[in-house]
Image (tube, rainbow, N blue to C red; front, side, top):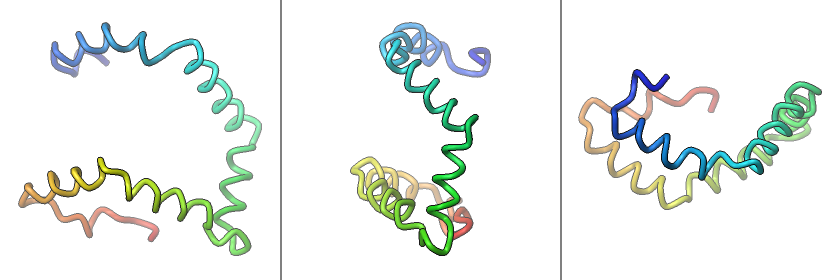
Length: 93
C-alpha cells in the first residue's frame, strides 16, 4: 500500500504507526473481529435497525459524531470546493 502514498505519509507511518498500533490496539481489533465472526456485531446491528430498535443507538452515535469539532471544520473545508454537493452523498437516510 505504501507505494500509493507520499514520502511524507510513508515516513509518518514508519514513525507514528508503532505508537498508535500498540498491543492494546491489536487486542481490541481481535475482539472486534471476534464479534464479527461470532455474529455478535450483526445481532446488535440488526436489533438496533429493527422496527423495535428504531435505530436509537445508531442515531445517538450519529448525532454525537456530527457534533464533534472536527465535523464543523470539515464542513467549512468541504464548502470551499465548488464541485462538492453534499446532498448527493447521503444514502439510507
